Image (cartoon, rainbow, N blue to C red; front, side):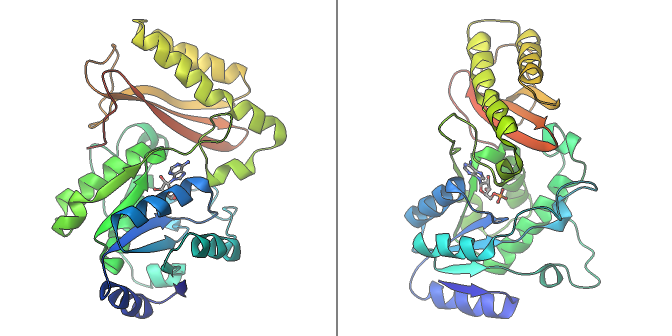
Length: 290
Ligand code: AMP
């Protein structure tokens, strides 16, 4: 696997790959775990070559968030990517992505406004901007994103449509199911921040969500089931719950009644200072973000 750090060498290396087949892109912030690796494996089924990116994107971190503390184990990440058959790693630094004078921002209205968008102002502008840049830099035939970040997937699909990002790509933004630990906790680079006690408490998140879904699908009042879910998380040691919401799987419009359409239960909650997110399907059948 080749690692490139400049736009010029990236273009050269991607052109080289393209001569012998199609290219899939998996964008990450590194500190790779089995969830990321599931994306790399899925990518291999969608294209001849897999290009991975690692970039801890300052534009998507708010003031007081964990930008400086975010783990950056580059050598270990390279070894995992190499073992997974990834052809090329694009690992730009901040000055390469945002040179002096950089002044453009991609802002996706609607789907980026509620849920994590409300709790983390500007976050999805940062995500959309960097993913737009990465798409333009690599020009992949297909790109894969985790359903772990359901709202992010919806934002990226909306952006790709709205900005006419090359036609095959728009149709080829693929969502990959969430990979979980043995106790059901969704894998995340941020799980490394958890103490032993916090890690045990964090395992309650998916269990409480499954219980809430069973109640909602059994006909319970939705606001009551969501309030019970929040109370259960606080009782398990979570410091706060940013949101526990039932939303349309595609538009992310909120439901306060049992859904007749595919829906998702989406939760963001803090344990200590670590913010965890998770989402699961509810109702008739699981959907795909718009
Ligand atoms: P990140 O490095 O956190 O920006 O994540 C990079 C990509 O991996 C995103 O598309 C995430 O949605 C995806 N991802 C992260 N964790 C998981 C997981 N547990 N299961 C599936 N995909 C994941």
